[in-house]
Amino acid sequence: MGYDMSIIITARSGVGSYELGPLALVRSMWRNRELIYQFTRREIEGRYRGSFLGIFWSLAKPVFMLLVYTLVFGVIFRSSWPQSRVGGLYDFALVAFCGLTVFGLFSECIGRAPSIVTSVPNFVKKVVFPLEILPISVFGAALFHMFVSLAILVVAQWLLAGFVPWTLVLLPLVLLPGVFLCLGAMWLLASLGVFVRDLDQAVGLGMQLLFFLTPIVYSTEMVPPPLRSLLLLNPLAPVVENARRVALWGELPALPSLALWLVVTSLFMALGYAWFVRTRRAFADVL
Image 1: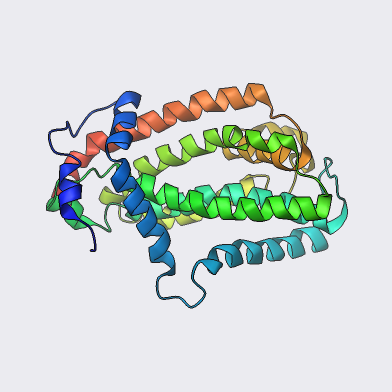
Image 2: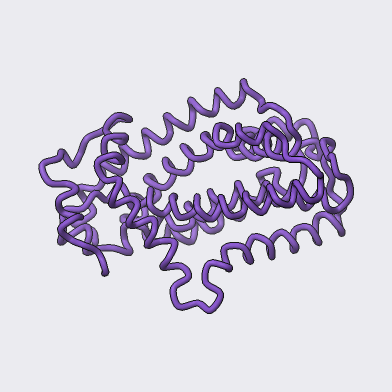
């Protein structure tokens, strides 16, 4: 596998394997930080190993999807945003790309989650390995690709709009609810994927539905008022909206909803981690 097994085994020796709670999660991440780095790097390098263009594909895919959605929703359906600063198709491209970048982080992680544990049965059966770091390493690789896309967004914003708002520094804060939601869902689905092998197919369908329930290629103002409040129950919707406010329009995030979702998603992450730790004892019996 290309790993140093002595490092892997030492990382868990003498440590309680089934600690629960937020502090236990933080301790596990700190204790296994070298492993997280190794596996995150492996995820990034493994995706492009042997390909002719290499890491260039991390740029090509989001740009291609941006062109497709800009053509369909910007040219054909003529979608627009009330907060537009540039105007025209270029403005739609920036707004759509921002939404695609945020959603892409969640989509990439959730799509991988059900098979994270089942793809490495040897780590479950034959070595003492901190399985809880596997979702974190997949998330780290997805975060790397999101940063690449964000760099493209910043450059495009500067070239097309002529400015980069200072509120961009708040982007990590407004993304936190999405990060917590993503990690919690990954731990939950990684565990369930061991016991329910059809979960991959269900998650794929669910992500397609979630894409159209998230205001990525349309604005919330386009949704009829009776359905708008229902749409905002989607935890990704405020993350996408706040990301656009701070990255493109120079506006402060909606602080009440941001604070609410920070609390809700952090609790969900803690529950997802606790579920994973509780159920991991049965992984070896199933795999």
